[in-house]
Figure 1 (cartoon, one colour):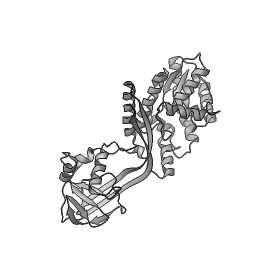
Figure 2: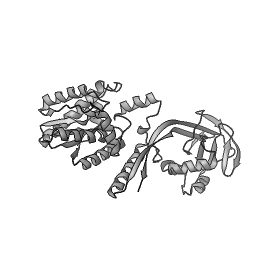
Figure 3: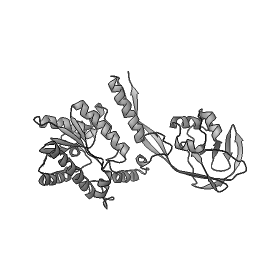
Figure 4: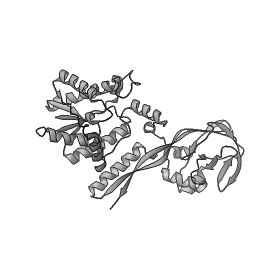
Length: 360
């Protein structure tokens, strides 16, 4: 039986239930999910599915990440609600390719771990599956493992096995609706030019779950805990000196109430220039390098390859009191005679992140 797989949280439970209910079937996993955005999130979920299938001894195949085809199929349905018409089209698209894979492998039956997702409609999934069955001659097996406490059991199994539990269903449209409702920026879709690994970003999760795999190979024990924290994302930062654009690096957790205004330097203390409005601090690149022990040759280089966030927070705490959100801006050179303009658009929001703790 070919089993279309969407994520490890659903598949780890679903595959075990299938194996019990269909003991005569050899299960073959098929990870086919071009609906998952961005690609880094896709790779993270695939990495966790690979681990799950290895634990369970399930063969796994990866389908093509045909993103353009998926976008074309769901075109003009971008604003459809969850469990709406776009989801039906998405199921049709993924099930069709799953059926083709099943025929390629000589399998006469198929099913999908989407059936155990509490965010999906079983009726909608069954309709899509039956349609594929009639067109391709591959029987779609509909099972409901959510009842009788199944969803709670699935959640506990995911927790016990340290599976990656994603915070959104997958596609860019559902993500934007979810983040809008939470009044948060969809930071999963932001890729900083600075190449920083930002807190709670997909890249930070990839690093953590990769480290988890390394610990498991070494038979080391660990715990993955969740923490509430204040997250930050810089959306836009622009600086001018005497009306001319200049390179400027905005230090982490810099906020500005006025998106745009003009400023003059009032005084300088210990290498930090204090502007006359909105509590803005400027420092030149030399001061930044001295404080952080870095060797950037220009601010543009810093903008494209920034230091770790933890180092920036340490720098901020050296200059400001704890919890400060005053703008701290790094420039190549600073002129006492110049008039500066600064525009910062950023967002601070409540968030949850995971942290891995080695226990032995």
